[in-house]
Amino acid sequence: MGLTGLFLVTFLIVHAGVNACIFINDGGATFNAAAHFMSHNWVIRIMEIGLFAGLIAHILQGLLLWKQNTAARPTKYAMSAANENSKWYSRSMGILGSLLLIFLVIHISKFFVGTKVAMYADGGANDASHNLYLEMKEEFQKWWVVLIYSLGVISLFWHLLHGFQSAFQTLGINHKRYTPLIKTIGVGYTFIICLLFLLMPIAFYFGWIQ
Amino acid sequence: MEHYNMNLTLKVWKQKNTNASGSFEIYQVKDISSEMSFLEMFDVLNEQLILEGKEPIAFDHDCREGICGMCSMYINGRAHGPWEKNTTCQLHMRAFKDGDTIVVEPWRSKAFPVIKDLMVNRSAFDRIIQAGGYISVNTGNAQDANALPIDKKNADDAFMAAACIGCGACVAACKNSSAMLFVSAKVSQLALLPQGQPERESRVLNMVAQMDKEAFGNCTNTYACEAECPKGISVSNIARLNREYLSASLSTEE
Image 1 (cartoon, each protein chain N blue to C red):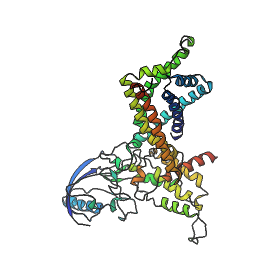
Image 2: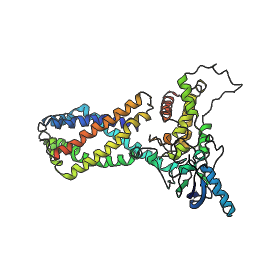
Image 3: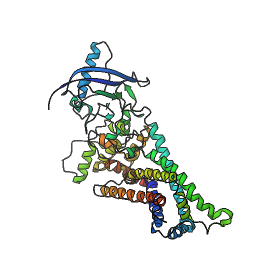
Image 4: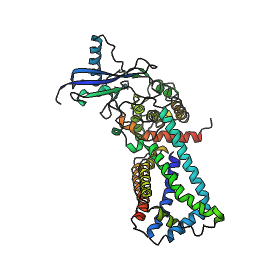
């Protein structure tokens, strides 16, 4: 769980970085160039397979944990004051992850599939004219799409807030000096990544970028 | 500290035996002193039940001074009640006020079946210890205190881990019923000391294998165990257990 989680953490840096190109506000020229590179470079294409494998492994590990952990307590407590001993989001990683998965299905079917269709349908006739930036801009004019994306990012925020530092503990790293540093970096990472992702649909919706 | 008496409503789990399905019973207790321990309050209640010709509530207890780890009670949704780093016998009634309703349940875990009422069977812990929580040497007389040089920090960490009394509060409080804090304390106290080195690898592998066999859940790092541990065992021991396990798995050739 920790290893696959950290792998996905590194992916999010790239994803947020490429998407942040929209804030250059050049009508999407930089962003489209970056998106074109990401979808056509063969090294990236191979890494893409690794990414999906990592994501699926993370999901399968999560499902296995959920199954074993529910079985470990067949009778629940009638009264539980769990907030007194742990953070709600650390106990809700399964729910947050499931929400993220639902979001991912919507997200992938909107943009990832669109790019692939343009690249391969009709022998790639629409590949050159495919404008991902324009597609984003249009999608994020709908309030409900912006809402779904915002909820997705909020789920990601709480998932990362626990997941980042938790991964290091799982890998056996808990040190008087380094753990506070890891935790600070984790919180910083979570805020920056989620703020960037959240700003994208909102910036398009309110017309902050053209 | 001001002394006062209180009347309480108790909602206590009653279960005839392991296979019976239990349910809550409601009891009233009167004139409970704020200076009583939680177990003494249960003694008063049981005396009252015996006089009324009813069956007393079965609960585990032994030393009543916070070091044996027997008094497993889940009180108002927390292992050993509301106080930090505390066992039930050291929980005093001044934690409650007149008119309170207190819910008392046994530890809930597949690995800790209820024997009767609030008593659970924690033999799973014993079997984990039997799987490797020892050193195989004949112990003669105690050695000279400083015959074996031990790093001060390691000695301190080993002592901190050895403070574990095996009460099971970590399992009880964990949303996954994971026994990682217990196992990590038992692995750590020996892995940190020279005496533990010969069996260091087989110990961690065997103890973790037994832990999994006992149907405890997995650790998802919520750290509820550390918060509820009466001896304040740190989750840094769990990281050490993960390290020990990883390195033993990679280097063992058995």
